[in-house]
Structures are given as structure tokens and as C-alpha cells.
Image 1 (spheres, rainbow, N blue to C red):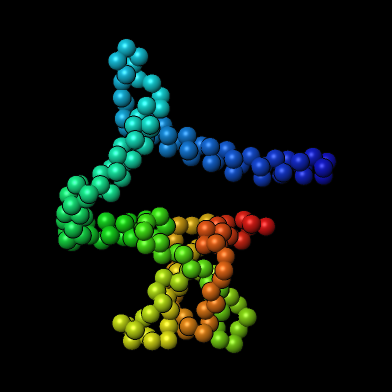
Image 2: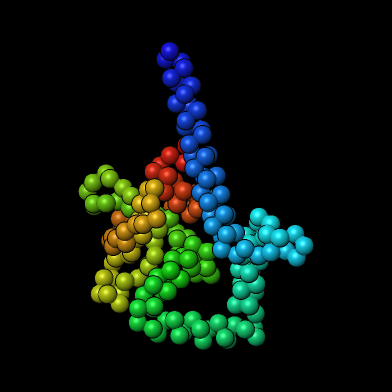
Length: 186
């Protein structure tokens, strides 16, 4: 009976993440595809056309944003969104978050190990986001973003420079390790 229970638990450990991942992607696929019910003449509505159209539209917008002729128009639109009071907060936050991961100014490129107290043994993994806090009057401090496990949130913490040790590890591996609660990579 103990062996059957062990097999059952092993099956759950394998199936649950797989099924949830497939379900989430299926749900997103159906949602995006359902928003754009694009009929094809003579064939009607074919599943997947809306999804493919969305991907192609995003690629087209990416091309236009990086194109010399339309870049100016996109900058004007960007400046407009950055000037509107309530829109600026939401738009700027989302833009900064995306740029931190995939933009030209990746913010989470320097993983670090931080000693939480100068005389303690507890450490935390994070990413340096700002090397100099002179503008805040904090000359000997650096800012470290510490992501939370199993969450899309984190904390911005300030530490004395001597408590921060840069790591020579790929930042994506460190982020995966943190977000998985230390389970990934073992």
C-alpha cells in the first residue's frame, strides 16, 4: 500500500504542474483567439487564426517602433502617456518592469548575495538595480531588488556596499532559483 501511495504522489508531482501549465496556455490561447474571431473567406472561423494574427500584429508593432520613420510617432505617443497624471503611473510602471526583463536596459543583470546583517549568517539573493545612491545622500549604499518566491512581486532593499557580493552566475538562473523557492536547479 505504501508503494501505491508513493506512485500516486509521484504521479501528482508530475501531472499537476504539467496540466496547470497546459491549461493556462490553452486558456490564454482561447481567450486571445476568441477576441479576434477572424473569418477566412470560404472557410469560416478557424481556431488559431486570431492567435497567429495577434503574434503577427505584435511583431509588426515592434518593427514600426524600431523603424526610423515611425519611431518619432511612437516617441510622441510615449511622451503623451508619460505626461498624463494617472496614466503615467500605470504606463510607466509596466514599461519599466518589461524593460527590466527584456528591454535594452535590463535591470536584473547583476545577481548578488547579500548578507542581511553585518554580523549574521543569513543571506538573501537579489539583483543590484542601482550602484550609486548619492542623489539620496546614501553614499555607501546600493539598492538590491529581492524577488519573492512563487510570486511576481519583490522588495527593493538598501544595503551597505560591503554586505553585497556580486555573483558570477547567469541572472536568469538566479531568478529561476529565487522564484521557484530554491527548488529549480537542484
